[in-house]
Length: 177
Image (cartoon, rainbow, N blue to C red; front, side, top):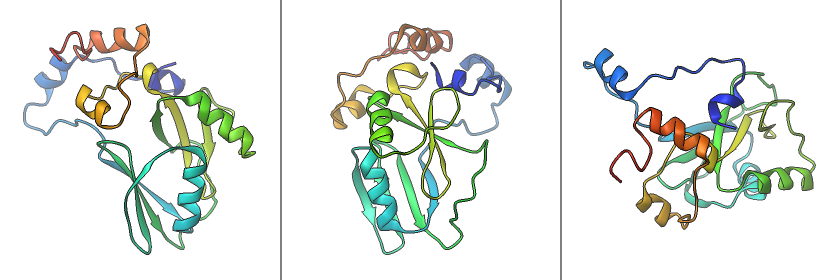
């Protein structure tokens, strides 16, 4: 399932890179996500929670902030009294992993409920809705040198994900990598 398919009610535009260039020559181009910032009730508890689900390196840490490394991106955790467990049914962020089935097993082991949604979604203890997708299934690529630096040189894409990338001129075999 692609990231776009997991948001079944949303229609994702399928524009080409040429279309985007021709309609926005005077604006900066979005090229990715640098980080996602999450409010949590306690930094130590948040790091322990995410460590129970994912293998990661800590990029940095302060008394009320921590930064979870994701190669060329990161998650910024900020401790705040405003972080409560009130949830929101639509707002979420998606994490790309090398093995979504491993995350699903960990959720079961830790007795963390999965949401009734397409794909793999859950709430963290502070009400942040988290979506987890396999790298191989999404139209998102990392360059070979970034994957190598992350120790993930064996990751591949499904035929469906590669076709979506080819349609946009973004597949590794169509971009000259």
